[in-house]
Length: 166
Length: 101
Image (cartoon, rainbow over all chains, first blue to last red; front, side, top):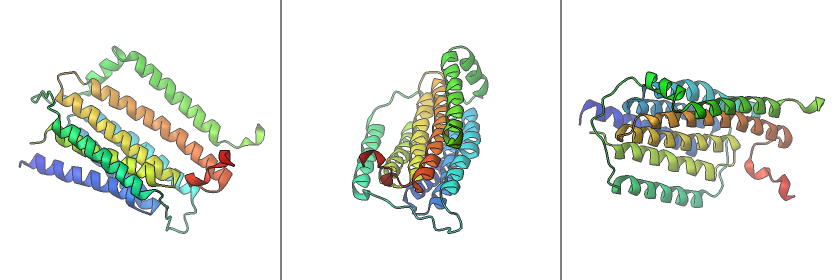
């Protein structure tokens, strides 16, 4: 095993382990903070895959945006002065069976399939290529995504405002 | 040697953990966290396949679009959760059964 392999194994274990804490912990605050480690672990996995721009985007949007938004949601919908925000679970046994079945089938599909793999791709900076592709081939998805963000912005602001003036 | 299968296994583990969270949690915010895990695992798959295939980096473009949709989804979902809290004084999903009554 090379050093990169060891680092990958550690990162993968941290990612999956903190994801397990997210879904298994009974405290909402613990879940939210271990989501941080999961997002960082996914960003490091992107670095392993040679996706530098995507790793930076992951840190900026998930850690800087979505996680903060989730924490806002936690704090606005619970009384924080009792810090034991316990959450309840339902259907644990069926849920466990279903997710185990999903994992086994996905793992079998991943390991039993003979993927057509191109191994020696050079690691190059991707930002320029992504920018060019967004301005040429993927111009329509780019515009649709920006309209979607605008709609989500207006919709979210519309949904949470006070209804006194309606 | 890290191969494509390793990335796929990590992503499968994240995906099934997310499914477990979505299925078993009562709290709406915890369900949202499960959905985020699922979207992240899908993204890992997209980027891994784009690295190990002969195609260009189109998979990364798709992953960026998934991130955009996830950001929009979480903003609207939290607005809905806040409204639900204002209405029911609770964010437990099994209490949101006004349509049944």
